[in-house]
Amino acid sequence: MYKAPGRSQRTGITLFQLLGMFPDEEAAERWFEAQRWPTGERACPKCGCMRTSRVESRKPMPFWCRDCRSYFSLKTGTVMADSNLSLRTWALGIYLMATNLKGVSSMKLHRDLGVSQPTAWFMAQRLREGLPFATEKMEGIVEVDETYVGGKESNKHFRKKLHVVGGTQGKATVMGAKERGGKVFARPLGWEPGETLAGFVHETVEAGETVYTDDHGAYRSLKNTYRHASVKHSVSEYVNGQAHTNGIESFWALLKRGYHGTFHKMSRKHLHRYVTEFAARHNLRSLDTLEQMQVMARSMEGRRIKYRELIV
Ligand SMILES: [Zn+2]
Image (cartoon, rainbow, N blue to C red):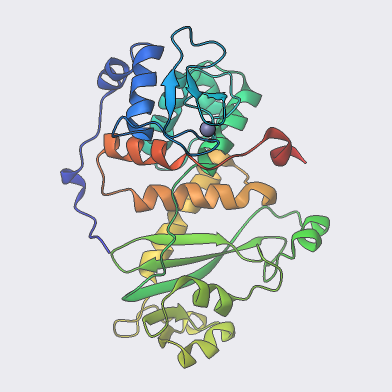
């Protein structure tokens, strides 16, 4: 668990510095290459072997694997796969996603990067798909809370299809856990059929740790596995000794500012990606902007998302 340093300790970068880093496509290529193969040893994205070479003509692609006899580029095997956008465009997209605390809309990418709006939308979804997320179970004091996101119109068809449970007035339930002073993990509930609030906690928090929640009845069983205390939100109690959920609630506040201020809506189908975007920014918040961009570029590898997976 890390401690987030104060704002003053983080170093941002100016647009001048950013454009100085990526003056042309070649510079962007060098940057992505340094993130992906920091030791200079290239691994083939298809077979994993190291016997690869640079193709001087760059045709059809800049790298070639001698073992599986296939060509690859810096985009192969990442969320950028098969994209016609320049690496420079991707680098600037990473910057925008890292630095816009209330989220980056496809309209902003469209305007700032000069790509069409549909392309910008696809790019934003791919960037979200490539973001790092917390994979280790949480320890120490963990605040768990649920919130409701979504418009007024209820989409019964969708709810039925994805087994979204617990929502009110057509809203989706989003579950979140936050290590006190540390990372956040959040995602829509019902991503897996039959998932419960308590089930989310078991999956996210190490057994035996301290868990604080509100007094929702669904959390009652947690006392069997955790040191569990709750605050009675239903009677307007917000702090019960050390037990409060103010940290995760601040996270919800930011998510909702993004919802209302940036996106206006987050479709159910893509809600998990928007939530991941906010959690990733939270979890990287103690790093300098440049480090955030590096982490994001590295985590794009091994993920893949196709346009038809997004639209069907
Ligand atoms: Zn290979």
